[in-house]
Amino acid sequence: MSDEGRPPLRRIHTDEMLSSGANRFSLEYWRCRETIEIVESLRPGKSEALKVKPDGRIINGNIRVKILEERGFDINGLDRELN
Figure 1 (cartoon, rainbow, N blue to C red):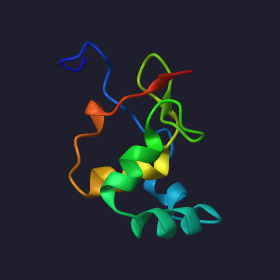
Figure 2 (cartoon, rainbow, N blue to C red):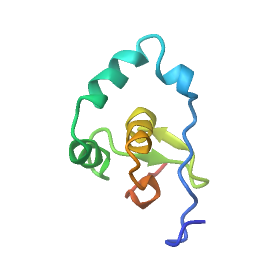
Figure 3 (tube, helix red, strand yellow):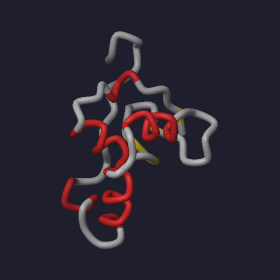
């Protein structure tokens, strides 16, 4: 559990899956965005908010979280919607 009592975030897709097929276009798109823009897009209430299961598995936002991880961003501090 994190210091906020929430489980750590866990992507449900492998790096290979996120960088192949149609996903690669989304990966390329989000890699060109500023970190703050990615974080804002994940905020609760947004149309593509970060959605997770109670155990921390990411249901929506895997690609954006991967990019934030690559940039050294503390992903476990992100606000999230439980799904």
